[in-house]
Length: 382
Image 1: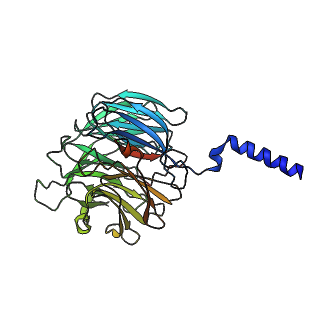
Image 2: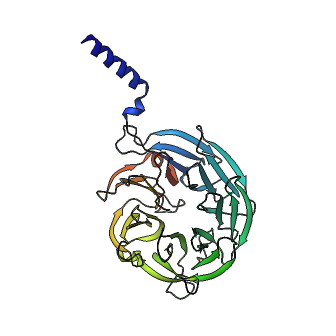
Image 3: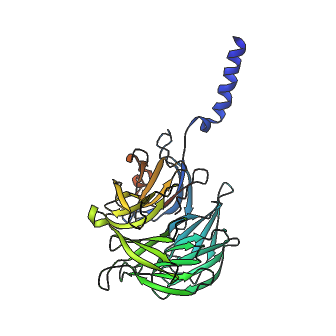
């Protein structure tokens, strides 16, 4: 009996030194900025426990300051999540964070040819990155080993934002979105040859007369589809478009796939896929929804299964590897009615909201992007 009591004391002592082993946690990185009404400007990256079952839910574990005049925008991983890339709207600087060492180390990469840094994507071999520059009408190609820019590709249409790569057909597609001041929305996507940067074609993604005001914002290839297929969210037009590869003419045919006005939603933004590639997720910022589509029968005509209300500004989403949870970041560049500042936790199996993480919101801060730390990260083919 005394031996059993001694072993119990040792067991409790050991696990008392490591309380995290007894608790669930899912850690997320969120880059944030102050809400417009705040008088003192602040930016940073917060590491927060977002596990709805954790006793530390909503607790900031690490707070990494950023320059207050950066307007850090998107936070994206490379292919093996060893680096995180942070774009900026106000400075021609790309920050690269080393995720392999803690405390995390960041370096600033000056890219003077790029104004209003938007999206970063990586090649499949993790050796090259592509960066869209909404304020300078170009794409920067960079060496993902040294993280130095290699060349700039001038585009025929202004305001590039979304970008997606299909290595199998050697194509990049870039959206023409809107002027940084929110005026002069575009209506086209441009197709490039990925290996050379050659401009191949430009396509209007609207059924309306020009200028249509569609403002295509994000573009995403469907993984392993045959033929190659790509989705486009039209922020201004409130529509989802699709391009289907035509192997005979070596180009895409485009058509409208869904109108979000039909379900009372607007400003579609980000897109994701599940592991089986039979579900397709889209966020809309006004009034804030997470939409679940069935693409198992015909990806060219997605069937809406459910629209889950989140909060104003539904934007980026982080998923757990087991696809149990989706974490929706609710803030879209501090715009009125689209900058709630919360993170909505969705149980994907139940198809319902189970919690809201309001830590940043209650501090007068808006998260601009969200990713789970590498241990918990699932990129959802985003």
